[in-house]
Length: 321
Picture 1 (cartoon, rainbow, N blue to C red):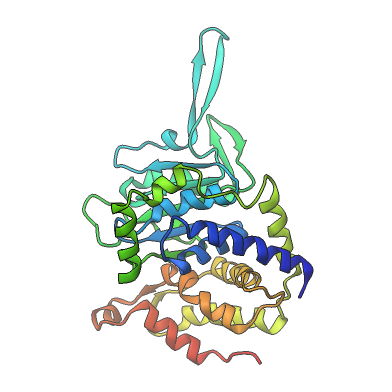
Picture 2: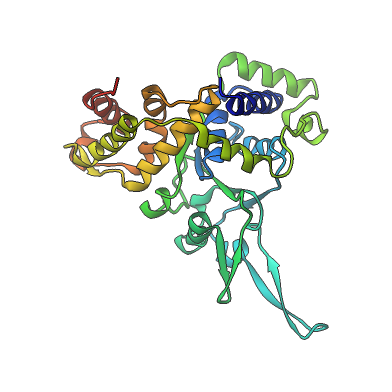
């Protein structure tokens, strides 16, 4: 095994173990979150209340040794509440920048679809360029700046659906399902026993696995993961197939191709391999492509789902040997 990837895998295995101390179950969500971070992208987390969406992001920030912030999105939230604003300082006779919560490493945008489009758009420049403009001045954000935005799929009252352009800026969508019975039973026992997950995190029972700057070096390690030319072509063909499928009104764009390539490389490294396989690509197809696709109304009325279409496309596109 490549020694760089071996060290990489050891640290990420330790990180998963620390996260598991407070986040019960949700192994797939943890893996997809790590893939997002290692690819230096952003993720949309979807799930009903109480499935540990917020706790997952807070725990990851602690375990990976980076600062995190949280914004509760509401209908009256203004763009300046996110980016910050210049305030006149009478003593200094000049304006002073009061930085908003966007100046952090991991930003949890809680219930992002509860804020109007103007406020949602305040994140677009930050997500794409990792800079923000305040009063015509541009300010750089942390190199690890990552947005984890949550939304409740079952709650539509008082919400503003994310525009397609903003959804496309999220590398993938993480669907967090309610825990299995044994996991929920374990959580119930911890609550009764006064050993809550939140309490464990606050009490310092979860240790930081990475130090300052190590996340950047781990990202650099992904450059040693081999991605064969035929696999690159396979990813391109998969994404292009979503645009030509008869049931699709809107297919995935070029940003989806980039996300699938980067994510597949990170998934291989998490698995301890220094090469990407077709299974890495296929395993991420739904998370990367699903939120970017729009079905034609007539197919949606018939009950066809995005996941079913993706399954058909995966069957139709030839897998490289």
